[in-house]
Length: 516
Image (cartoon, rainbow, N blue to C red; front, side, top):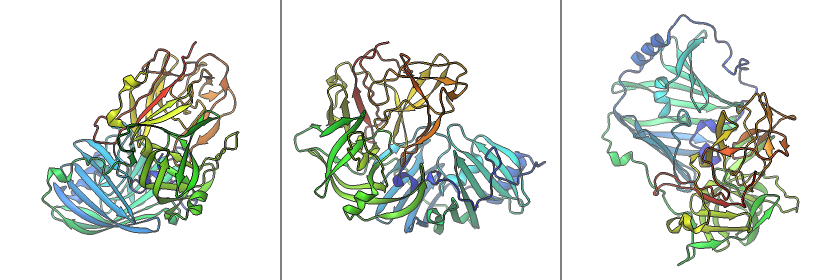
């Protein structure tokens, strides 16, 4: 669910493999793997002997080539904690882990604490070092040249690790997440101090334009590392600027087909942005980017209901009524989106906007306003009820109970008007319950039979936002899904991070009472 701001530092956003890859088995595992008599314990013993003693602290400098751009990656690591600082073209990104808390900072300077239950961390130069120590690692089999282990990560993608029979080292890693598959190769192992490390890594999804290449230029190990070097950084800057002396601003918005469309201006051009809490960044239609003559960086090939090209751009100033956003890093991709009133959507206002202000959407009154986070008081909204929400790569998720047994997490998505469920959320009997956390209030129901919709399901995905569901027939029954924290009649969904100095998202949605 992620845009270039996420994709640049995580390989898991690389898309579906091209036909040049060997076709995987039916269960998605790599082809050509046979049974083996080697145990996982024995393979890991060979691996740790080949790697040597892990250096307690190190400082690394890498050259990175990605999406047609070159840059530098500076890595500081100590005691299982690390911080990666990446500069690629005009963009600056950071990612790391400190005292068990994974985090990332995007190109707009927003620091996001990553959910602890999202599975293993995205593959990078540091997390690969500890891949063999990941929980859930089990022996799968062997090929002519490798022993193959599998990581069944709870809440994350399946991964396959290839340990060389001759070297004992980790030489290849494959990852599959849905239909996505990529291959990471590790080579040019060298000994520094007591540890053998790969000095060259290359990731590919079968499309050369999406390849990522790392080369280690300098490694200091052991090194002197201070705690301040590893601590989670605060937000680098405020992205949204309120007028002086003002903490509450009404936004020019219209409600069309259940969507919230906000009027904006860039370089004197009037635009329409979809208010989209289910999107992990700010996006522009590529046609608008060209019309504004904004620069494009890092072309990549992606797929969502067909192939398209995505780039990054920098918007000097974005005006939303009285609000100003300066030097905004945004994704640029084709957005074919029109409402029944022929209102054309030119862009998406996602996480990077929500993280900088409290966004209050009153569907009943047809009003949208932005409130300074430091000045926000939930008591300002009568009948407000807080829902326990987690952020996963900037997308707010709420726990939902379906019927009496099944449960799952649902995206609070102001950019969607349908009630959608993952195929993994199944029941052998029809289920009806209530939804209050999906845009405008709804009393429609979703009926599932043995995991299938009561009429043909179809794939549904949001370009750049990564959400993929099955869309089911909506019946006229009285209720649909019910949050695990059950509200009374008027509902306000409020999300926030655990620490105010990091990015928080607060989305307040007042609705009319929902009756059974």
